Length: 275
Image (tube, rainbow, N blue to C red):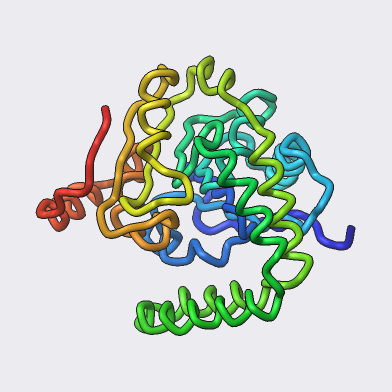
């Protein structure tokens, strides 16, 4: 396989380390606005997965451990976005990387609707690359208007479009199969690490109304679960400022950032909390 796991690091290594594990799309192209929001507060490590059709979740975890060790990163917080949350659990279970805490962003333990994951796999397999490209260009037009004052985010959107290839589509199908088969509930029940979660109010992909009750009942280490009102499944992108404020606070790296953002969003009744 020509492609390998790619890693980019932003910020001073002396800062708390936050390691971003991307979702089904497999790369760092949708996290630009969140990266900007945490800039200067953390050492932000982001990854792009290879377009592999063979890796298991254990393989993902092993490759990430190796890549971090090669760069001298031996400890940090894991930020698992959607599919990335499935990589979090084997990283915890293997106990080779020193995890300081876990943050699930639109993430989950065992997917609450595995039939939906299998349906998504079939639909992904039935969509032609040309149709997918047209859909993505429509998304890009909307996103370019929304982020017209954020050049870094605009560049990431173009990179997101450029990376969508036929092999990329097949890799997404493979990741959906991994999700459908995975059941890390025992790891979540037994972990002593602090666990936090955040998601958007509108999230039919990973319904929080199933995930949150399960975590509350079965994960003793769950500290807080936030639902961001004006955000969707991609909460790190569509609710980047508030998501960053919560993440920084959970890591103890907020330096007053959370307080100002909290005041600005105090009128929102959709941002709920579970302690």
